[in-house]
Image (cartoon, rainbow, N blue to C red; front, side, top):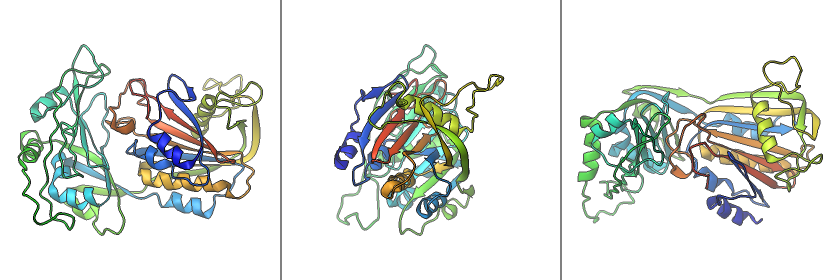
Length: 414
């Protein structure tokens, strides 16, 4: 498959793929000579909590990969930050319009608590309980999850989801949730107003924008129903001197670096894979589903020897398998930008530019289980685990598998 078609295919991935199970979608393709495949996928998922990659037959990481891992980028924790701070003109002009700004409430559960997310496209999404939703006075439309008892609403900048980037406020969806049972009613409303911006890209003779609707939302979060949360924030930008540390200096703000855990696993039993066989072939190769289960065990440092007296797990490596002398395992945990993951994927694709003993490498990316949105800003359901992850398997012939998790309450990934 040509690389240009890969990007197009990922952006319009159908519900039925070459291999589709109850909880994962698996897709086969080829990177070819270029690697512009990550951007469409990165745009469908807005923030990530953990990134892991596994390289069989590797004991020491290359300089290029090591530099990327160490330069993942910092993120910030802000205590008791009012929501209205994220929709002020100063914040919009300083951060939203000068890069990709991400924010997510910390230590909140999507099925129980009010949660908020700011997406890099400038949309503010809120998941609110019934009482909070009514007190804000904002409007939205129903969640796709219905239950007999209405406990919780979600607001996404379509009705409270504000499009901060495009000089518009689009009141996006206000989803209604209940704890494990979802929802009731809401009215869909889309607002379109212009911000009063002072920038080089705004023509001086442009008509003065009508800001009544924007002021109403600002008033709602600032005076009518002030909302405060602990937030995680990060910002991707180039050539900009502004700092989140200085901007939020009036609040309790702390800078954090992602946690990096590396290890060399010896005598690792790995499943045998064939890039053209997603479903595997008996006694010849393992399936994509078996690989994903095995990777989960490896990333958890589980013992896979299937000892008869083990009361923790009797899981073992799927067959057929082979033993590799050593494998390099790296896990990055924090608030991770999709732009950084794109660079990491590209570098892993270049890993096979020179002959290697490894038949394949993997890159696994996990989103936040309690984010209000999942794939392509769709409402994120939570039932048992809030699944929200994908995995790339990159073969030495530049074929790849793409596996995407489908949560119990989520739509199929695009």
